[in-house]
Image (cartoon, rainbow, N blue to C red; front, side):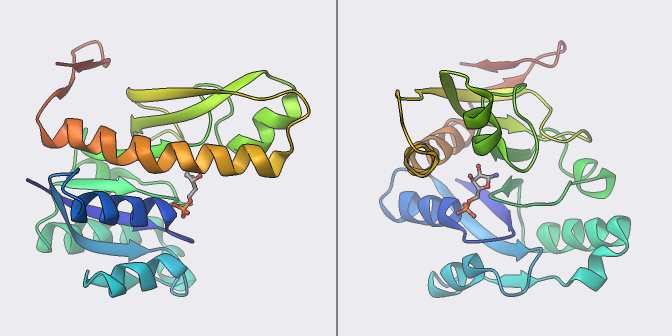
Length: 201
Ligand code: GRF
């Protein structure tokens, strides 16, 4: 069983998918702490309802990103987290977190990285006219939406599909892929090679 600390900023549907997968016995993990970069994030209520400890950080705390990340690392360590799971966390994670959890910070991004990084992966892919997009789960590093890729799942953008329809299908894939990928980690099957590529055994 692995202990997860989850970072969120918003609605927390991926957090909910993780909570549900654990409850269903599909993910051998425990969420020990949820920290939000916004004190009013809906995801905090989801965590609270599931009996998980929460911390909501304010904009003032993030005025000093290094101090904020030191606080997050300290709280996550104190809660016993072994991995940090970013689930709609709209902030960078920096040295104070990455150094304490090397190759143990995981992010989900709604595009096939390295294409369409940034905060609007779904809309950017949609408006570019690509025919295929998808979801990426990867280890986070100091650069935004970079770091060794653990899993990707492609979706074909259907002819004439609306952005809203694509968004709904993307989120549905995320909610299956994220817990599934975390389960591979829980089973000890995910390693980062010397060449910084992920090997799944
Ligand atoms: C997801 O699309 C995720 O890929 C991106 O932010 C969104 C978070 O949604 N990083 P939620 O907060 O989990 O509902």
